[in-house]
Image 1 (cartoon, rainbow, N blue to C red):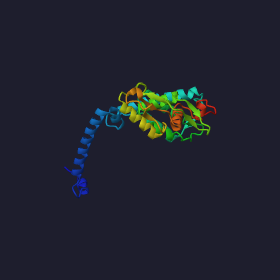
Image 2: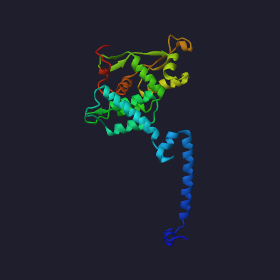
Image 3: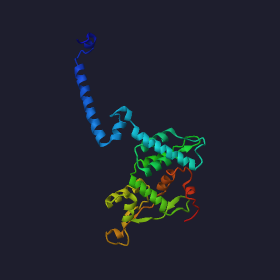
Image 4: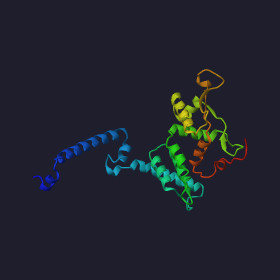
Length: 252
């Protein structure tokens, strides 16, 4: 028997319709959850579409690893026991972005950014720039940047700014570094990195000495820009001047 008070509140008789819509919505969500879990189980768990005891477990595992790496980086600089802290917004953004990554190289960079975010007053938000850059990069692009910063000749320009000299690689070298096998994918990455501003303005594939399109004549300039170098330095856990990180003196 229908409750009188219940019927009196349903003057337009819409409650049965609302309940029907609710049931339809629940079924739709169940279908969405099943599909999402099939194509990406961690995302399904994160959005609460599976059992609650599994929610966030995958991301939590990644976060623990990144925090452990952060501790290691601070310990190497004898900063672990000092009274330092990170800006809440920076900490949240780093953990929010980094917890989706399982790649060791990218996790290491995220940990470095968190370590270099720690200051005495905890108000430094300068790493926000580098967080936004790293969040837009793929595994292969990170590998290119790391290699470029580790192998390019980096120097202090006479104007006082950090710079790097040209670094050229052939396709075979880039395939080995990135793990990509399609030259078009590598070309895309190089163009994208240049557009992000983390490699020089003339970065990318080019023909050397007007040779043919064979791989032996095709080279890629991958020298990092000042922004790319600073991203690399911060992601190593170093907050100081990038010139100090590379132990550079005035030179051209």
